[in-house]
Length: 435
Image 1 (cartoon, rainbow, N blue to C red):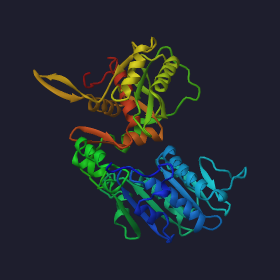
Image 2 (image 1 turned 90 degrees about the vertical axis):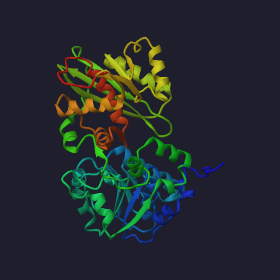
Image 3 (image 1 turned 180 degrees about the vertical axis):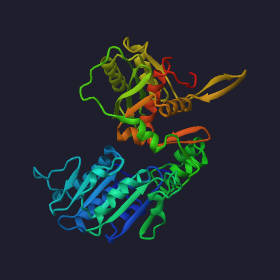
Image 4 (image 1 turned 30 degrees about the vertical axis):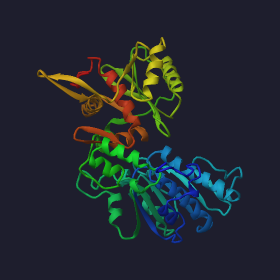
């Protein structure tokens, strides 16, 4: 069969792409590297393997690689890939003594080198004080200027270097200045790797052709061809996100019997997709996010069971889920459950008919839900959790020709569904699009 895939995702080092092999085993350890890639083109795998190779063959005692991404989950993903590689290729070199055994934040080697892993967060302030030999930044296009200001001094004393990788996400800040990642693309000190998804053997031609049909030319160019396209606009800017995402979780939740609670869910698809469960409380016309739960894809029965469990804790007034694709199975299961069947509503992304001044037209419910959330945020009628995942998801959402999409949309997709259920109560004194 054409485009037959003959590699093992669990052991990618056995079938590296040509550029990955060049990058992973590069003998020049004093080199800064810039990796501009399309989606799922192997940048995270390449950086993970490179981190191990540096520690095994090039670093001396006390020299470390620091892995950073915006969220802990993304950073842990890279560290996990590094550990799997080290366990297969250099099993006797990993330090597994009690005080040094591998954790979610580090891998130590017997030669006294190691790989550290932390979430960068919004500003990178928590990393001040580290002294490292190699900084590896994943999804660097989405990192703030404050992060780079805090991080660059870590490389000074060791004469360390940085590898920065990302799918593009715009050239300029809203004040017109160049973003750090884009500036790196023009900096001659970086060795450049440009990888289009169309050059990646793990993408089939059929998949990419389907994406071309589904996406606009600009979106496809950014997400798959790794081209900077500043014509795409963000839905939520950083100032608004930081102003609204301020809530802290209550360590001991006690349901307020005078409040109304709502659940929004985005149901995972296949592969490494994720389910998100977003819980909201409404008090006197204001909406407060109380929980953001992210899980790897489960069986539909497991997802339904999780929703039923949350319903027992919060006694939701309404549950909004995406019933498209695999979500339809979850929707059907909830409609058969006595405790949830009268609360569950299908809020999918398909078009629906609307009448405006006697004319019949179609609008996408998904876009309406995003505009409703944006209106609530701008009018300070909602507060969201101070979570890296929530902030990153909102920051990733972009709009082109009234179509909204994002590279890390699962959390946002759950949020808009929970919020959509809450705003149906007319006690919210704010204009929203009708439903």
